Amino acid sequence: MHRHTFSRKYLGIPYAVFLLLFVVAPLVVLIYYAFTNGQGEFTFQNLTGFFSDPNTLGTLCYSFGIAMVTTAVCLLLAYPLAFILATSKLKGKSVIVLIFIMPMWINFSLRITALKEILTWLEGNLAYHPFLNTVLGMSYDFLPFMILPIYTTISKLDGALLEAARDLGAGELQAFLRVTLPLSLPGIMSGVSMVFLPAMTNYVVLDMLYNSTYIMGSLIGSYFAAYNWNGGSMIALILLGIICLFTLLTGGAEEENTRGGALL
Amino acid sequence: MIRKVWRWMVIIFVLLFLYLPILVLAVYSFTDATNIGAIRGFSVHNYVTLFTTPELRSMIAGTVALALGSALIATVLGTMGAIGSFYSRKGMASAITTMNQVPVVNADVVTGFSICILLVVVLGISKDTYIPLVAGHVTLCAPFVFLAVIPKLKQMDPSIYEAALDLGATPFTALIRIVIPQIFPGILSGFAMAVTLSLDDYFVATYTKPATFDTISTYVVNATKGAQTTIKTALWALSTVIFLLVVLFSAVMNIRANKEERKTV
Image 1 (cartoon, chains in turn purple, green):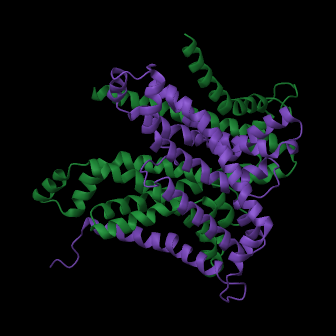
Image 2: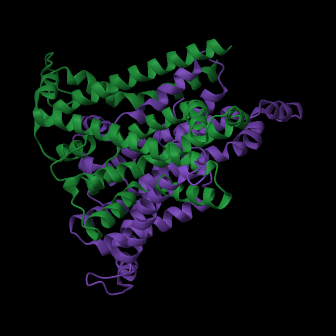
Image 3: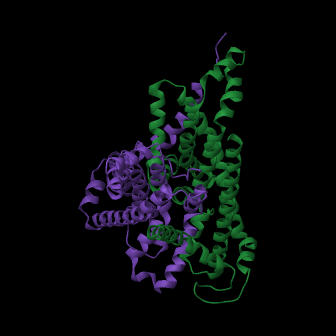
């Protein structure tokens, strides 16, 4: 009688199949391609090639450099702002926060175009300051992703802790350094991972600002353009390794999901 | 007093950084200048070009259609996945959650490239079928729908569903009439996220799209490499239109949220 009893848990099956097909299977294929050559023979050549070529190692270093400076700039801008917004008693604060988040919803390539026009006007020729322009472009693109998680974390801080610190004789600076800052660390971590990883891979920002130096993402792009699936897969795999490492370091279990521009 | 000045200076500085480029471009989109800095007369020719050039119109329509279509599929899949995994045994639920997390933390370049390799290189599906492109965008978006729905399921009072069953509803009816309405705000914000992610995507589209199809992102990136000024300045107009739409949409959402807040108070 109950051959086809409906149960809510069966609803998960299509999605599980979908994830296996479009998330797990591509990764398996990626690993296969990374460790084979054009003839389908097993090889470590792609891996050793990456780590013995000064050009690709330079690219890795340059990506790290761009990503670290971008993250630092975003943090230096976002933290004071998030702190001021979260601790202010302004009316209609949610509207002000919304204004800082809104750029997330404007197409990034159009925003970079706008920045490019301004920088061209200011600098004359973009080619003079490729590193500076790239860092500006990336910070401009990713800043909202740093502001939102830090703001959310500081807003949720228990005010009683700060009062307790004051009652116990802490000055304002001391209360900030020993209570607010450590407690806002999860927000900082989540913001850092939202900025650092895209900054290593988003090569379009460099392309659009006429920075011809490669970052890790550009390598995938150039292998893709040359139909070299094996080389591209190895770069993708190395990037995946970096992402995994990074996610572990920043305690990636953060449920905070701000990339899609969490609607306030 | 000094502190107050400092606070406002930080706020204004970041605001200028985020908005000055878009606003300057918006002003210049209403002139016939081809470079920022040149002072020229008022003109709406950029807007005329934007809305009359067939290439630009089909690119915009294609981007919107792709975003809405893949967001719809992603929302159905992600919502079903969230409900299914929420009521599954622990092993199954954590398997789905782990797989779901991969596209969320992964770089879009890697997601796009790996889907291209599987579907196009290994399985030989032509990019012209749009299957790789839609599959790529659904993969990019569905995990965020999943993440938006799960918290709503956790907040839900399970006894209402059981009451419905006790009163004779079939599990399916109870799902449609009890569970779905309660998690609907999560589904809606998941859908909105999916649309914005798809609209903003460049990397997945580049690796999976048919050669003749362009999204706003891929089009803009290619257009900035060329030197065609009419197209370049028409894109300033596009940037302004999108900016105004985002402002309008945010204002409407904010007013609605305020109204609901007042209702509940």
